[in-house]
Image 1 (cartoon, rainbow, N blue to C red):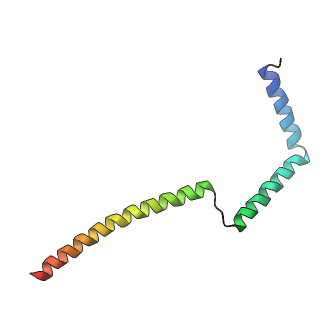
Image 2 (cartoon, helix red, strand yellow):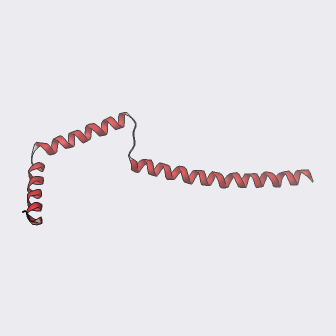
Image 3 (cartoon, rainbow, N blue to C red):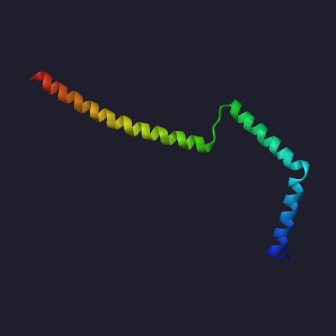
Length: 83
């Protein structure tokens, strides 16, 4: 049976071989190709989606506060003009 050290050593050697072989370039090219396709489809990353969702959430909260303030100002204006 293999020990954990032997498995880690074999894994490290495989990673070194892959990094020095054309496989690493192929992976980079595939990633670039996929990113290009996503860009053409106007897709965004999950991180960007989360950022925009937070911006939208904050904007909705501010809008709700402003709507309440506007309603209060309108009510005050109606009271002042009806006197």
